[in-house]
Image 1 (cartoon, rainbow, N blue to C red):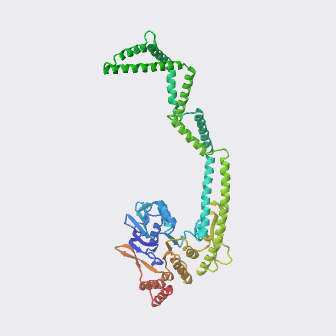
Image 2 (cartoon, rainbow, N blue to C red):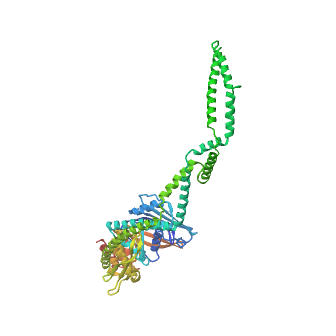
Image 3 (cartoon, helix red, strand yellow):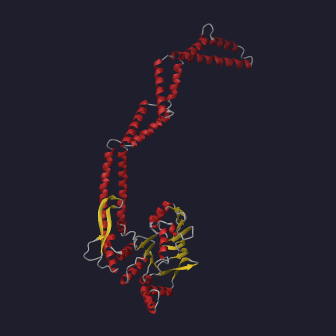
Length: 556
């Protein structure tokens, strides 16, 4: 529901603040007073395109601001979350600023939003119906949504089941499409990964082996140097004539003879004795190493080849054997996950066929539910049209099968005939202005219970009717106001009298400028205004009595 509306420097409105209540509110006044301008301002809040023509002459900018109750639909809360708009339970503040430069800024609860996003929000807030602008009725593409909004909980469940299956189906369709489009590149990558996997696997790398190979190569490369060094050392300590080991042994024996004479001598003797035995062990180890040493040039070649292989793999796949082995694990897992075997596409297409079959059944179930619901809607519309004195009108929901889509396999359009004996034709091509208004009211009477709109604005939808039809229209708008706030611009006294509240719009000239003024009428003022609507400029006693009668009848 629209609670408050603030307008500044908009067309002939200098400054205006209006408060609205629930139920039905009639906006009346002389032609050109600014009634439609107020509706234009509300349209801006719902996402209508702006124009610098709206800015009041002599002003640089204009402002329109509205305070709305928060719609109850869960989809609306999700929409606010998507746009990052904070929810304030006190209401939703929508603001449009228009600059003379042509710049327009839209804000919702203080957050700037694009015009497209404002429209998405606005469709939950207000629905503006004009004599020549029946938004949904005049656009067949919206008829399916209108029909679906008539559905009960069971129908909505059927529709949501189909949409979930359709989403799953589309996802698989895209997967198959992507697979086909990228089959060659996928195959190339798989070939490359398979080659790399085989190359690393065939190398048989072992963590830490490179260091051991480098050490072995150093030994093999320095074989002669090692042999010479070990041989010289062995000869120096074991030569019969100049044996260092025998010399140190003799020294050790000699020192033992004086070891008992002094503690210092004993310490020296012990050290030399220990050194003798350590050298004995060293000589034995040198001899063993000399026995083991053998120049293996083939082994050196093998070690060099192995190290060169490791170097090549490191240049391709990483700086160490550990990194190469990690890469091997990664590509092996990718190959395992990416089942691009020859029958992969065939498997996907079999799965897609199964999902299409399931989707077809769900679509047919949804279609059956829609057609059953359409018959109920037709009957309900027929009843509403009769109450609007269109007894001879026939209303029908026509179905046209279409390919799978997010809404099913149905295309829907409303058909009508208003004269007996005439064939049914598309609603947009048959009904006259007055008739389309009544058909719209019949639909709104029904859909206002299910669509959850906070406000519905009727902009002179009663044009071209009078008498009992005018009264019937008044009753329908009032009925709609019991489910959604109804704001109605009217020139008909029957409609104004039926309203719960009446706002009078007038214009006055101050300092050579035209200004729009709005006031809520008291009961006494309403009698005079309705009498003026009945009689014209000259109000008579009879028109006053008639006005009182209309207001009294409206309360019954």
